[in-house]
Amino acid sequence: MSFDTPIERRGTHCVKWDSMESIYGVPAETGISMWVADMDFATAPVVQDAVQAMVDHGVYGYFGDDSKYRAAIQWWMKERHGWDLDPAHIFTTHGLVNGTAMCVDAFTEKGEGVVLFTPVYHAFAKVIKAADRQVVECEMVQENGRHRMDFDAYDAQMTGNEKMLMLCSPHNPGGTVWTRDELEQVAAFAKRHDLILVSDEIHHDLVMPGHKHIAMALIDGIADRLVMMTATTKTFNIAGSHSGNVIIADPALREKFSARMNALGMSPNSFGLFMATAAYSPEGAAWVDDLIAYLNGNRRIFDEAVNKIPGLKSMPLEATYLAWVDFTDTGMSREEFTKRVEQDASIAANHGPTFGTGGESFLRFNIATPRARVVEACERLAEAFKDLQ
Image 1 (cartoon, rainbow, N blue to C red):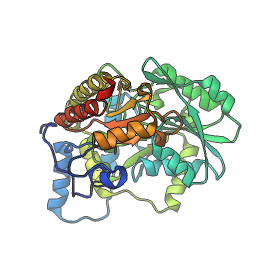
Image 2 (image 1 turned 120 degrees about the vertical axis):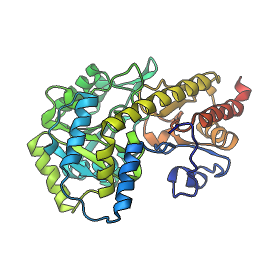
Image 3 (image 1 turned 90 degrees about the vertical axis):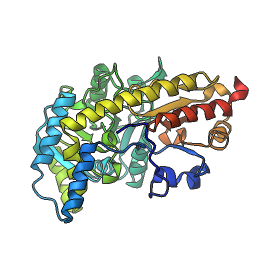
């Protein structure tokens, strides 16, 4: 399979392409969709084979005996991330937005604060607010082309009402891969303020060459307050399976989370379990290696082209396929540069402010699409801002 092969997604109930016009005003027929964080690639053949086996069997009943599924997760985390986890610590949720909501529900009460390092994945704040908790935004600074956390400032912000910290690792948007030192500082901050630390590591497999993701579970002295969240869905482009994992080593936290799962009557989707079991395999690993090489090529092309346009600056992607482009130096208002992208270039990209404080001058572009489309998007952006050149 070639990642260059275009796959028509319009008319397939695809939110990324079929909702582009109604949300962004970008024409369905001629626009380029670069907003929702899924890829325009078919998943790994090993995953497709697993789904085909389900189809051939023809009976879609309740799933039982998930030992192979748990063993696959254990193998993947050890093999790819050097993390030796206990399969008994795994809970399966309906994706990680659901996992986020479950953590908020299980570990906080109404009115309590949940800390976010912003700008950050917009679903966090949405879930927190919907649960009647308080979003506590700790704005990051940009330094040497990457995000950096300012813990002196964050310490001063804390009031004692905060009960949870949600970390995005690697970070979305911007693609920053946190160093061990940075993760240790996050852990120390969580301990200083007695916060449950939820580490969303859904992008942990999509790390560019030259960078290394470190699982928060490998940081010493944090297990008693740590909740890990991982999934196959982003890595293998199977987000529609709505399957994610919440992994909790601490017995007290695990018991509390289990009680909420049971109270809500939650059980996993069999399609997601079959797909994840197949994905976390040597065949799946080889496919991911090829995917990263392709995404890295797209990253180089996109960054080089965007950074040639005066006033535009793309944050160097260390991980993810979500380019974070700063329009500050255009001198334009947010409305003006957004209009040029959407109306002149006919590109749908995520609006920066949806990611919280610090995103006001940015747009987020999804580059996980055939290379020819990335090249075309770059040409359209250059044309839309040609008066600056």
